[in-house]
Length: 486
Ligand SMILES: Cc1ncc(COP(=O)(O)O)c(C=O)c1O
Image (tube, rainbow, N blue to C red; front, top):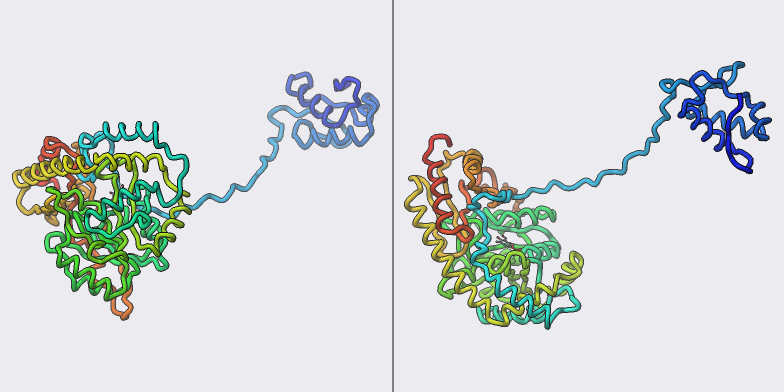
């Protein structure tokens, strides 16, 4: 037989022969069992060198399309006999191995979020923000950025803080993406990451510090009994490099330090050589324009102070800040530059405009009034609805209180029971600091840092839900607690 190898004028190559034979086998023109011309005949037919024809047949054998039988010749194999070409095995690329990361659960859409600390969007001044945004886009659009933040906003923040009794200059303020980024850059900047924080504490702070490899020291906080300064003295003897504290309307308990506790904590930090990071998320949510003293006010410039516009103005703006002593600012700015180069000045300019027009003060006054009403309504509903044995804190303002349940209540069962009725609560929003740090004096770790959390309950946040929504969620909760199922 003759093979049909078409190459035009050009002399056929081994690849041409392989391709032609492959095509003919596939089309059935060369059925199984057909004998291909001997190498020598092919050379003659196509005017090839012996090597070319042989190389083509070797390749056809390697592809499993034909077989060479000794002294008989080369034969086409049936399709089922075609050896599957050995797959090309490429070793997989190594997988990225993430470190395990805990996270509090978020309320699923459509559920009544009883533990969320956000403010009801109904209470947010969106129209006025839009007005400021339009004006910035028209007239003051920043064309650049730097890592410390939009200068007019830093000026405006420093001015506001000074009006509240804090000695802060604009160049001591670093604007961040929410106060969360302030916590991040401060913790990253620490030479030694051993951080004390209240227990329970705002969960994302604890998770953040842990993700940075920090060792945590728990400062036992019982919102019904106040701070046991002796216990804190013993805990701080572990000499953390930083104490992260939320002295006003603490998240998650709603607890506010008394003046004596503020002074006591400052003294302990002085005694044990512990720097302070004050998270003042709540103090300007206090009604009647009354402000609580802040650690930064009492302790001076070495207290790092963070606050944010996200909870009070508009969450999606993501604008917060940290005020630090002049020596520390360059480090914090450098750390922020490493993570974001700089944040969006456009958004920062909108907040600056909002402050400049005096809208923020008007808004805070209205917000405080609304929060007071919701807080009072929440307390009334709790008084009326909760069964005996349930206790709650009375923070006097802010967005959140702590509801303490009898130990007999099975929390996971309660959570799923409520979830089935469309109410979301989260006791994971409260992080208990249970890891114990060895004490420098060689004594066993502090007992209060170990074992079962000293509180058994969850956060109720009354800034997000309307009075009606709050009452119906609390009714569902009270019914569940009275039911025998839990
Ligand atoms: C106590 C506390 N600090 C800081 C933050 C971080 O908030 P943001 O980054 O929105 O300012 C939160 C958020 O819930 C919080 O509860």
